[in-house]
Image (cartoon, rainbow, N blue to C red; front, top):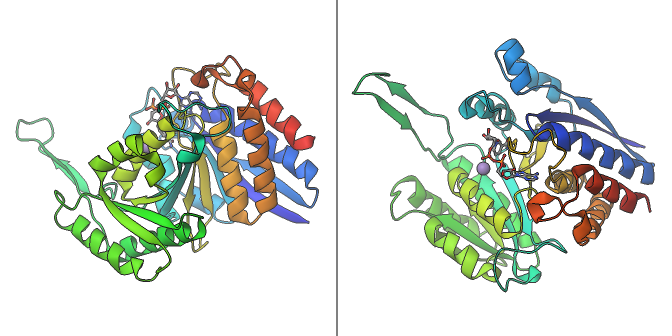
Length: 355
Ligand code: NAD
Ligand code: MN
């Protein structure tokens, strides 16, 4: 009997809707696989917590997560609280506190889903974006001075460390090696960013020698956007810095059909701390509280979580159920042009699992 302790943090907006749905789906899976159970502990951190306590999560919050096997996260972002407070006070606090330095974002066109790319067949878009998740443009270093005066100044400092670059590129090359194509594209901007990105390129060339069976190429981040649209089949695994990958992965999610489908894992490959899995979308203020959210991105994130925990066949079964459901247009939520409610999708996925 395996018992996994999962922290679930719904957060804000539609996060509060999709995370409970995901717990239901995982409970259904453990009904099917009776040798595995999930013990969820729910944390009510986020915007409401901030209104009550002045912080997004308690000071010692990381301590209550430390002993968990994994974290399921919804979204942070509240219409009444500035985004940099919600982001840094919760999601980044966990990612950075637990040094989850690899953010992994698989992108595929699932059955029944149409890409906005004309003529793009589903087998022509199958990517994994690996995002550096601990430093770079989002290091948090910087500051403001002379606030409110005409001479006001502000800076955000981007830093890359050799250790940070080596570990993310090694992780990405290893992931590329495990995929059938064994190809990786290193995203750069070393023409304009002439210090750190030049080191990034040098380290890529160095790491590549450790993986003789992996082919690799380099692309400037701006050119990469065009390549994603014009030649999606030329890409497979992609590694990029924090900001570059942040932008590319939203484009990737849109090209695969909807932001509501895309999953991600914030991974500590060394397993010193629990890793965190979440849909890539935000709180979706425009649809929150209406039961219209697409829960597929969260369910797919749970697949990533199961794979990470080593429960590969459970993960595969959940993915199969997800794909059965996306294949049926009657079960598409509004973001996919359908009329289904979130609960219809959840119920259909559970039915597939229990069949
Ligand atoms: P968003 O992802 O919340 O929404 C963008 C658009 O996509 C909206 O029209 C929304 O309705 C739609 N959408 C997103 N997810 C959907 C789903 N599951 N089903 C159906 N439609 C969906 O992005 P935003 O509007 O830029 O941000 C809103 C808030 O969320 C902000 O406060 C932002 O900071 C926060 N945010 C948080 C995260 C995170 O916690 N990881 C990520 C992105 C944005
Ligand atoms: Mn983003």
